[in-house]
Length: 256
Image 1 (tube, rainbow, N blue to C red):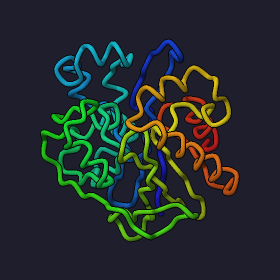
Image 2: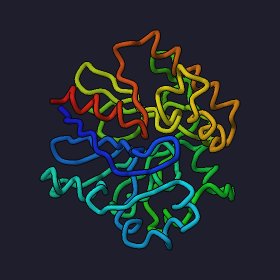
Image 3: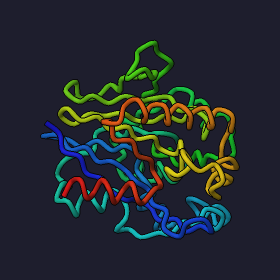
Image 4: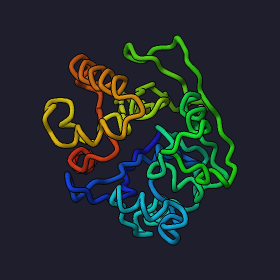
């Protein structure tokens, strides 16, 4: 049996939204912990200009506080004695992986296309984020399906169902993460959308930002269509992204 903790590991202030978050998922099993994305980490908060760069900080609107890091929130939950053994990563943008360095013994699970993109010289990535040389396990294209979507089974605890679900566009290897708690499925879509309103309001200003940040905007739009169709056909699956605070607060209320 597992327990799910929803934790906010980031704050971003932009012209479109002054309270953008970084919604990470902490999965607690009997003896170990798993993270889905990590947010920014201790090194980012202590040395932001060196780790992320003044230009990117200003452009993105990053704010920093050690208490927001995953490692500090794990301690606040009283779980510091359980090791973080695995980090399942949607994509390798710095606001999603800065915290990896705080868990140097964790295996990093990532789609193969994303890891290849990271190593291709694409300027969106900060390759020093992996300078601690973690064990990296990549997952290539498969014929396996989850509710009709391509699903790459993550190789962790055999009693825990976690899949990488290709949702390309934001980056060329961006994946969502599907996971199950008891009979309830969750579908974390990472940055496939920044705000859920992108699914229904094509005129919202956030769409321009999402387009500008996409490696391939045509793929991104196809992914949005795929998510719309998925939600229509599978209303019992909890779908949520990384940056939307309304989704985060709604999930916290459900837990309470």
